[in-house]
Structures are given as structure tokens and as C-alpha cells.
Image 1 (cartoon, rainbow, N blue to C red):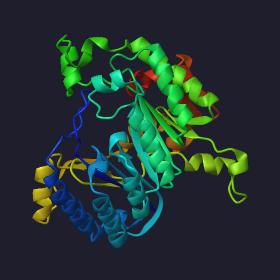
Image 2: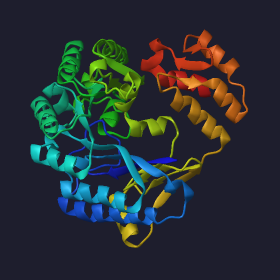
Image 3: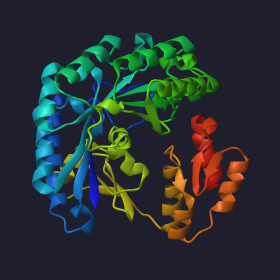
Image 4: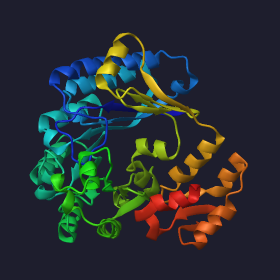
Length: 397
């Protein structure tokens, strides 16, 4: 049994206009107490007698927030604490980093600490779009960041773009995709802009206002078209589309070691940690607001960083939102998480494991053009990837 570990660092330099996460800019003096608390939580969890925590940790993902704001020595402390308290056989160790926080010195220190993969929030190569979204970095920072990471020896870099940012046009979107492809990251994520009422931009849109460039958002149709264009461009550039929002570069056969298959290399560039979420494998969340899944239960740590630190200092983990995952909930998760993957689901296997009949429901969705079916596999129709939530509503409704 393997285990993924996610470490949530809820600190940012500024809050993006569209963000509804439990993150915030805070004084740097709060960083060290938070890291102390995470290390202590690792010790508490590592000493647990719970069987599901005895698995070998094969993926680590330090996200946020902007965890690259922490000192490299603090990040190294967290990784060392995991080594000291868990059985570790790491295949992938990811750090989320904003471009403007990446320097040659930091990149070298991250590599020395044990990070093997960097997930960088590029989001756009257009400075007007970045500024409107409240981002701190600019186009030139993306280039300097990738250069620093490559010089430090990182061979697995993930970059993301957001389709639907304020002021985005067909021309600026095409340019952002082109510039990203020219940089050649091993992994790319394309996210479609979501207007959430919990964000500043979302509240402004609902109020019909104009702050935060609310009036400059592309239409839903334009956003879907941007996404579909990216799908075509990335496929032509040699990226395998493996999840609705994610692509992994397919290695050239000449670069593949004799002991590995072409397919193995392609799979290794997928986000191994995030695959645990979609495949319902166990993962432990550490830090304020981090979520966990044991296989039978889901829960979250307290979202407020101060409350989290105070609780850990008192020797307790502030767990909240504990939910038992029954058979019905697990089945629904198998369906909507599994269908996020482009390879789809083996519905005959799911029927056997849950003692249910899915075929009639799936056949109806296939006839409606929402799914495709090949043998016992069901997949989202290629034309429905941009509106996948609508398909999931029909599937689970």
C-alpha cells in the first residue's frame, strides 16, 4: 500500500482577484511557527497506530498558497521530518512556486532538499491579464524562472494557463499557448476560469460591477473555444491529454532507456500525486486547510492558520469536516473522478465491486452524445470535455 502526502502552506504575497481559497498574505514572522507546527503534525501522524498510515509514502506535494515563499531551509525541514517519521520511497516530490519567487539560489536549494518536480503558476504570458488578475509576476519572470529551474537540474516542470482571464482575447490566448509550448515544460495544466461568489471578482460579477475588470471577462463560449484550441495545439506538440485539465509530454523513443517502455515514460510525466485524487487512493493532508482521505473517511484540518498552529502547540490535530464515505458516496466518486481521466472507467469492474447496474444509465448518456463507450470502458465524449460538469450532473442526477 502506498500513501500520498500533501502539505498545505496557506500564505501568499497577495490574493488573486478570482481566488476563493483559504489563503492570505501574512507577516513573514508567522512562517517559522507554522513550519514548526507542520513538523510537529508529521511527528504526531507518524506515531499513529492507524493502519492506513503505515503505507510507503511515494508522492509528496507541497502546495498552497505559495509555499515557495518559505525559506528553502524550512521546506527542507518538512521533507526531512517526513523521512524521519514515515516509510518513504519517493517517486515524485512536487513544490508549487510562483514565477517571481523563483531564483537560481532557491532552485538549487530545492533540488538539494529532495524536490524533483516544480509546479509553476504561469497563468498567462500577457502582462495586462496578469495585472488584472492580481498576479505579482510578469511575462519575463516566467522565462527567468524556467531558466533557473533548468540550471538547477529540474527535469520535470509543470506550468499552468487559465482560459478566461479578464482582457483575454483569442489572439492573446493563442500567444500564451505558443510561448508556453516554446518553453517545453514536461507537464501542462489548462484551467477554465471559474467565477466563484467567494472571490472578490465573483462578488463583483454578481453585483454587476466593474472592479477587478469584471466587465472584461471573455464569454463562456469564448472560454470553451480557448480550451478546445489548446487541446488541439498541445496534441500536435506531443502532449498526451490524460485528465480534463492536464497534459504530459510524451518522451521521444530515442530518449527512452532500454529498460523502460515508451508508455512508462509518458506515464511518469503525469502528476503521480494528483492521480491519487482521481483514482481514490489514500493521501494525508498536513497543514492548515489540508484535506485527507483514508479510503473510508474524508476530513480537513482547521483552515485558519493561527487556529491550526495553536492546536498543534497544544498537542492536538484540529480536524474538522469529518465525513464517512459510504458505498453510495464511493460509487459516485468512482464515476465522476474516474471520468475526469481521459482513459475513462471500466464500468464492468465498478458494477462488480459495488454490485450495481450502470450500463443502462451509461448507454443513455452515450445516446445523448455525452459519453463514448468501447467494450466495458466509458469515457467523456471529446466534444464534452469543456462542459464536463454538465455531464457529471446528468450522470449523478
